[in-house]
Image 1 (tube, helix red, strand yellow):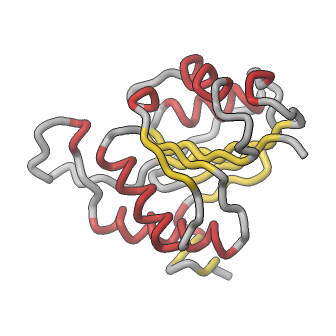
Image 2 (cartoon, helix red, strand yellow; image 1 turned 180 degrees about the horizontal axis):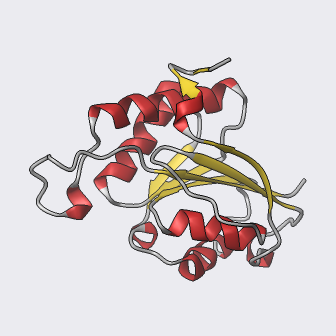
Amino acid sequence: MGKTLILFRHAKSDWDAAAANDHQRPLAQRGIKAAKAMGRMLAEVDQLPDLAVASTALRATATLELAAAAGDWPTRIKTDAALYETTPEAALDFIQNLPTTADSVMLVGHEPTWSALTSALTAGGNLRFPTAAMVRIDFELQRWPDIRFGLGSLVWFIPPRFVTDGKRKH
């Protein structure tokens, strides 16, 4: 068994909120609903990560907290400032330093980094992450430090429009 990485873009934020700065921008009602639905969906399909790390931006931490609560995840949750305003290269460094004990890790962060990181990790084409979308990338490697660009396999990509109230649309 190798390593699994789930990238989760924060849910829709409220641009009209009276936030002090970009870092403090909260989720919009639509974002709250999408985060919960994505959290339930991930639990429903039994794809829960061992560890989830969110950017320290309010919209990212709220997305993770809402998803985990809605899906009743047993996942260990952390925040890390390194995931805010990061680059694909810095994100790769972050991934390479993940704890070896976690086989499946979710990172909750931002665009345009998540699209570029997915493309780089999978040596794939252009993927555009809408808010609250998730992608799963698998690596046939036993250790996070061995992960490099181009070594990942895209397993699934799920935008929130395919998930409603925790149930997949037919």
